[in-house]
Length: 142
Image 1 (tube, rainbow, N blue to C red):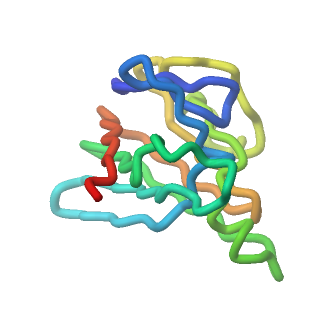
Image 2 (cartoon, helix red, strand yellow):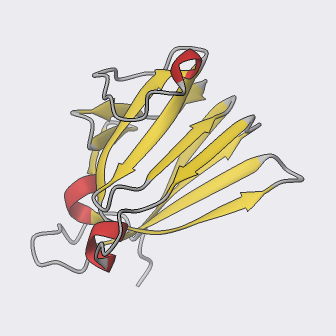
């Protein structure tokens, strides 16, 4: 897997020398899966909370290309919408260990055969294996 970002402290990213705190400053908006293109898009929007820097991008989009594996594990019963939109942690993890969905590896860049795991505060998980992930930062133009 190739990426244009690195994972920092399992809750943030570094892309183009920019630190992006996914856990505290962004809310998960949704997932789109295009089967024909073998592409999964995950989107985050800038949180409206007062602590979020005005210079943060308005939106982040992860485009997973040449997807060969996708698993979504459901949220915990009675979880809140706030927990559903809050990323807890993300990690790269060996695709040979897909039965393990609760471990975190401190690893900035993926190995060739790794999956990426997105853990949310409500207990849900998105696990993806793909050839490449491109992170797009979309700036507010207003």
